[in-house]
Length: 110
Image 1: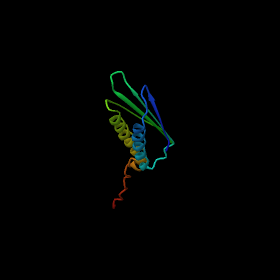
Image 2: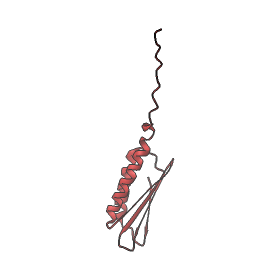
Image 3: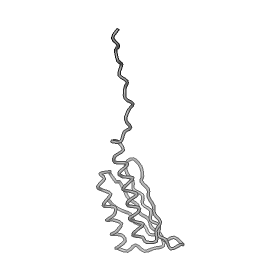
Image 4: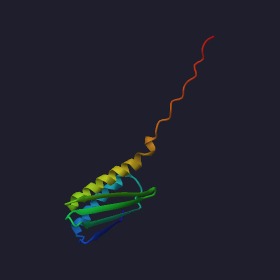
């Protein structure tokens, strides 16, 4: 999976890139076809880091974002949010709502 990482008003160091790529490698365990991944992080005026990730899957896009003082904590939070979304997407066909039970007709002895 190729991860496009964009930094707005902040430099992308190799440590940040490695951390983000290692977190997104974990998402492959859900066995969902991930077409692409776009990650963007920026520094907000209040000294907080904003991290957003958009993952493209065949059925649409999964989006998650987090705002935290520590960039690594924001990346971890986004990874957890995406894991929950992928888990839901992966197990959705299995979680079909049960149909109403059919009423059995009872023949009465006359």
